[in-house]
Image (cartoon, rainbow, N blue to C red; front, side, top):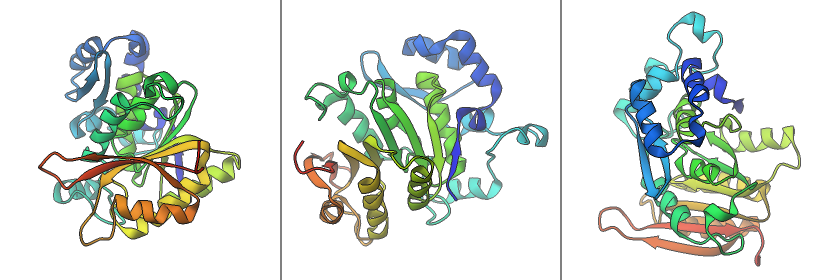
Amino acid sequence: PAQLFTVTNLLRPDLIALWREHNLANECIDEKEAAASTVGLVGEFIKLDEGVGVWKATVRDVRHFAYADSEEEMEERSVEISDDFLAHLRTSDVVPGLYEGGMKLWEGAVDLLHFFAQQPSPFGGASWRETMEGKRVLEIGCGQGLPGILLHSFGAKLTLQDYNYEVLPVTAMNVWMTTASEEVEYYSGDWTKVKDDMLRRDPAMRFDVIVAAETIYNAASIRKQCELFSSLIADGGVVVVAAKKYYFGVGGGTEALINSSSHFGLSLLSRHEIRDGVSNVREVIVLSKNEQR
């Protein structure tokens, strides 16, 4: 089933208290890094432009600060990590239906970070940083959640979703280290169930921006995501998806997304190709619910 969490369900109280005490939401990246080292965090900031960056936690960080240390503490918390889940991390990037790769930072997520830092926004042509204030953003299949967190740091209201609830403490750690925000909502569960739960809670729920990275790796996932995009995107909003052009042998990729999205009332606004000579050709695709903005 779909589950909704807040940061107090996901992170240990001592980390939250530290950030509140030092008011690190208003500090620069260097000062946040210094504070992180004093409490033993070993993650790092991915720096994009001067003064702009997002924190990437490690599994060690999350084990120390996110998950309960005792049964007594667990009674007050919503999430713990199991030995079975850790086994998935050691053996595979993805275990279909069990673990969808959320602990890994995928290439598409990094592509989105650079896209949002460098490309003009579709909301008036200025930068994304200048046009996100007050916008509602949903990142699906978020894993580490860095693209959505970057938009949150630009002023957007953020909801993050991942299939595995065990991944969300990683996401919350990155949110907390980057923005110290307690306003972010976290969902776990299947895309269809999350969509249905959102609309049950608020039938008028819509997002100005829906973000996804490396989630369209097979045909079945593309259909579910197009249904979600069509149901939850606001009029005049955009869907921004980063992925490989083709995922060979599984039927996914940006070409398949573009072809499928037209059947759900979505149209292509732009596509940005990325060739690095190492990976398959990747793209950032921008879709809109309306043919013209």
